[in-house]
Length: 147
Image 1: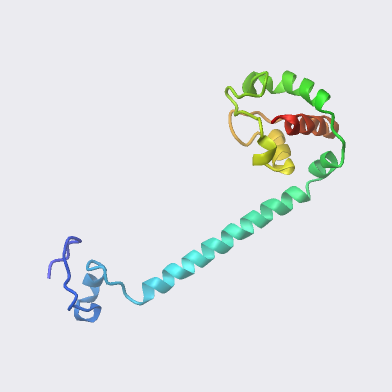
Image 2 (image 1 turned 30 degrees about the horizontal axis):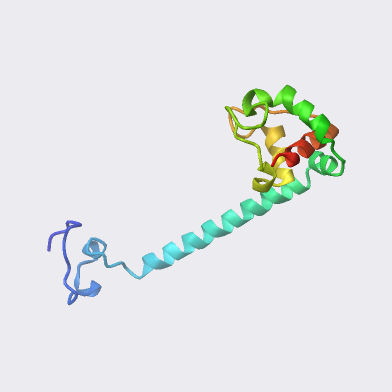
């Protein structure tokens, strides 16, 4: 029997009637493979869940984020900070240029995610910024005012 992937196997042929090296070619898997695939899927799922929990936990334990979120921000001062530091890439009206449009950003990202984005500069070409917690609270207040 040829071992080409184009081989058509009639319904009357079972996996047991084929030599072991031809079972996969015929599309008939050995019983061990489905178990391996299920195990890999479970391990990958658990790893993803742990990564998400670790990331969320790290953001919650971040003292800078906690301190910033405890402060009352001023949208007016935040607007001034935005014009000085962010408008070059995000546009004077936050409409997006090199950086994305920031209108409604508080609906797409949580407050902690916004803080992390600003201080980490995770998405190039955005640089890292390290504003004082009050300045960051002001900037958040401004970003929350964008509709």
